[in-house]
Length: 487
Image (cartoon, rainbow, N blue to C red; front, top):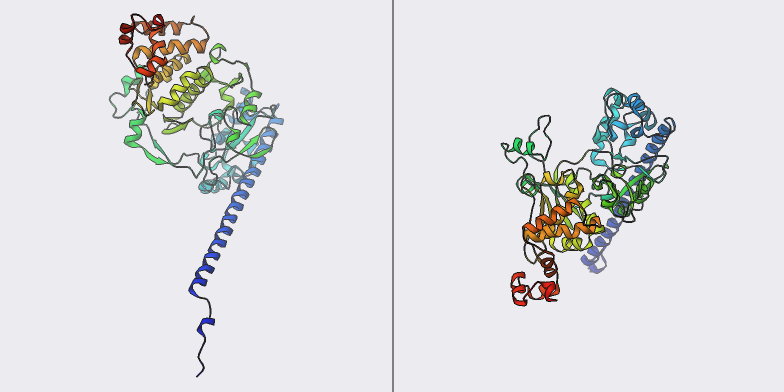
């Protein structure tokens, strides 16, 4: 009988495994390429939507003396909004004249935003019913795009609209958030509904909420007790970090990156310049309220509102991040902290360096007062600002308190109350470029009441103290006089 040669029959096991591996690699490459192509196609469709929205808005402007819906005078507002004027996409896109040009709800929804596709389809089925003038708004969940307060077709370098995945609604403090980012800790406040006439962060507010458990609770404690890991609500599941789409006032739409956002962003900076109210290198010498204006590093200044996306403030307490700092609070607290950090960078770089080295977090402290905590050596100091402080009417007061609490964390110099009070004098003079200021004089009085002097400040910031860490009193006794006298 003839023997069979089995060595020539089919693949060996090794050959089969190699073949399967190659097929798997090729399939993976093909699927990745398909996913990228689909991602790119969705972003292109999103740009087409923005272009259509741009045509509708520009057409509306041409029919209304080049005014956008949010720029209308009282008569125009009454005509298009009735009694329901509101500055958000839901109300504005529901204006009858805009609806005619937009044509359908699908134009307001990006294919990148597939998590909201169901809302878009529902809005499409009710499209004919929407009419802002009658108080019938388009569901905000069906809309992917935010409009920008400073968008103006007479200023072609301004931004009209953009995808909603902004980290913060203030463009000069924002970036593009993405579905590939980690979830962040978030918690709803447990504050009661306030009676008419009582404002948050006032004495009446503190008195009213004291009988409600966990009302006015500081942000970190609230997050520890009730927080859960969630994505930011503005995340679009088809866009990654650093990806967005933008509509300009000249009608063009473009893919966008984080380089376009922030005070010096490629798109935000020209947007702010287009609304400039003057050049003021030093915010507190401008005569303008720093809480209500954007001050660019070069001095160009504009009202903050023009660089703001028209959507509601995020009232949920979250763990925000900015410039390496963790910020625990709602969006209003986040924007306050960012304002102060940028002011320190610009006006008091020495205090900014202290913050970068010794402060890890800023915490909205509810009704718990304003204070600081620090841990020697690890640079993880915490600054806790009470809601009644950062809501205080005087912006100069905001800044001085901010400086005061950062100084409490400066373990390399002095963390005492006296040093913190005196830091407001030192850095206040840098901010106002003078000592002839009521707030600075008040800070001097506070420092004197603690027995803290210029000589003590100079010693605590000297190489002598850094090397030997000898207490000031011991040093002066040993050297027979003050630090500056001994020199």
